[in-house]
Length: 124
Image (cartoon, rainbow, N blue to C red; front, side):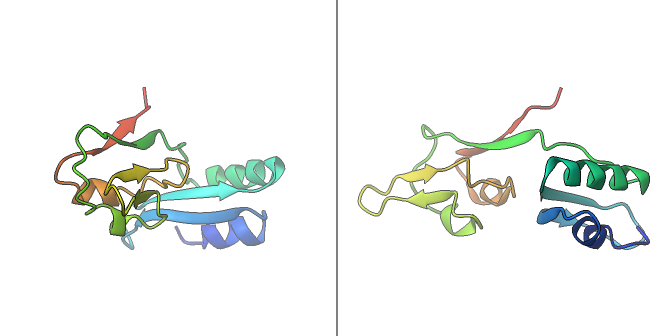
């Protein structure tokens, strides 16, 4: 992109932008996972702006699931979770997962050797 699209979403349309994950190489195609918040009209105008500039927008169609039957309580995933969606009970050493806090950053998938954290895909 030749223009600062995140700036325009915020300044021109009043959209709150939370960048969850990004892979952007200058001169090449990039991908960003963002959370957009605001009034319905702000979001609508902001999404129209993105479409006009050629940005492809797709709703996130994935979520993380914690498979408790695979989890050994090793806690290797806990410090890698940026939103504290994963926590450990210091008495029982059981790992708990709060999907409401999860931003699907995939960090837990990379560190769980027991494959207790999995990605559920909702796309058709």
